[in-house]
Length: 399
Image 1 (cartoon, rainbow, N blue to C red):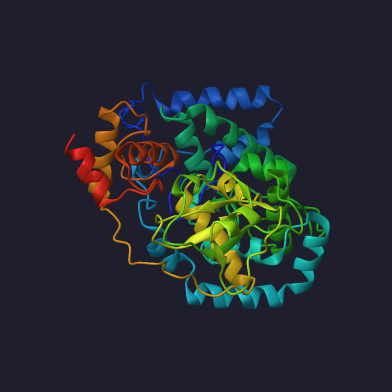
Image 2 (cartoon, rainbow, N blue to C red; image 1 turned 90 degrees about the horizontal axis):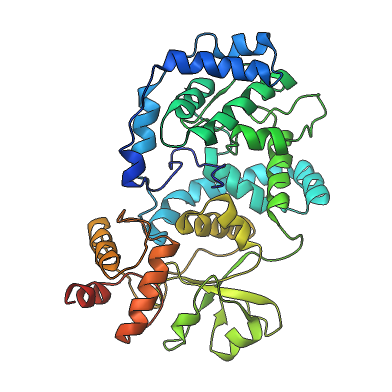
């Protein structure tokens, strides 16, 4: 989920890549001593001794959490592979059933926050299979371990303090705090600071319960999306078909044009005609010029705020379009053979040697890698669609 770094995605991994400098950091001191200091600081912040004892009285260090934190994630998969697995037929069917079952609640939530049911249900399904897989880790133990760890201690210290405040507020007890390995809680996986700031008591029982209360889950998710900038009544993603020839360097999420310009360039809607009007959109090619194509609207930025991974964000937005009635995605104009993770790492190393900051040779094609690829494609006279191709790898390898 959101990387402020605040939201995460259960079973997908919190961070797609760990820089070598962070992965190699070493912890010093004893966890017990650190925990004693943390308890004292929590008390100084006004958190009651009763809450501190119930939450941290028997907390121990969990090496399994650190092991998971150091692993590479799954976002090196291609969009078609990832979306086929995550936005599958079964998850779609269950999502439509839940939209129908909780129709009244979804309508009330949209009226208050402006976020429609398919958007919320898509995140609900991708994060925890509609609450079926919220995790089985002790949240307080995970947070304490990560707050003690050398990699991002300040980030998780804040979340651990807010976990104590959630208990103090009466939303959850310490024993109820069970979730994913990095401290995520609830059916759409809120980290504690977001739980404190944005959780909503929508069922009116006096508690914000994101583990068991569906109304609280749906409203809280919508509340977060609204805070991220969701615009009511506006589109988020639309599948399109692109012509064989196009100014491919314009296919970039940092570049927007009115739909009339995209239509003029030969971009066409799928299933319905693309309006030739002034609404602005970016052309998104998650697998390059030959693969699936979308127009990404302003609301798509919210998906990237939820999770910086382009493959996850595009999948979540696409899944929402399916829940809203859109057809299954096309595979594009031609079959695309993605590079392997090792080939992408090789390309990233070659780009680093040429002076580009790609964020590390991790095999994940993030924004920095896409930008470097685009610049080298332009230099070599290749279609500048920002997608790592075998042709570009050959050119880079040749020097």
